[in-house]
Length: 223
Image (cartoon, rainbow, N blue to C red; front, side, top):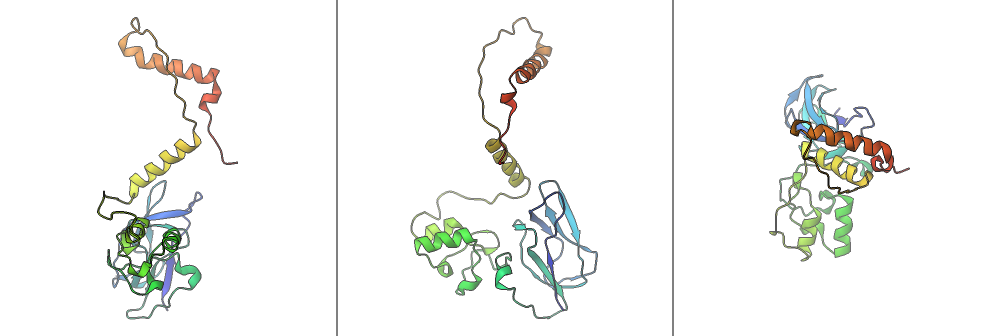
C-alpha cells in the first residue's frame, strides 16, 4: 500500500518549510532511512531521510515551493501501484508538477492558491484558460490579471523569493514592522578625536543615549 510522507514539524514552532532540493526522482527506488529531501527552515537546511522503502510514485511539492507543516510532499509505494486521489480537504495542501506554463482544461486540476482563485472570481477569469508562469505550473495573480486585460504579461520580470533571499526578506519585513523607525540627526565635532577611536566613540555615545532614552530601543508586539 502506498504511503504518503508529510512535512514533519522540525521543532521550534516551525509552521512551514521550503523544499530546497529533492534527493530522489519519481520512479526511483529508495530504501528506508535513505536521504529523501532537503527542507530549508528559518534556522537551517535539514536533510530528511525516508521513513519508507519502495518506489517514489509521485512528488507533490517541487523544489522552491514553501509548504505548511502536514502537507503531503511525496508518495512512496510499489512500482505501478495506483495512488488514491487526496481528499478534498487535503487537496489544497498538495501541489502537483505539471509542465511550467502549461494550461489544463480540467478546472479541478488547476494549480492556484485561494487568493489567486478569489482574484479570478472577482475579475471573471476562467482559470482553466489561463497560462501558468509560476513555479511548478502554478497560476499567479499576475497571470490572472494579464488574462483579464489588466496587466501586460511581458512587462518587467518577477522572480519568486527562495532560499536565503526569502528568509532575509522575511526577517527584514518583520523588523520593519515591529521596530519603530527613528531618525535623529546631530552635528558633532570630531576634529580632536583620534581617527582609530572614532567608531568606538560613536558606539559608546549611542549606547549611552539608548540607556537614557530606552523608548528608542523598543519594539512592537502583537499582543
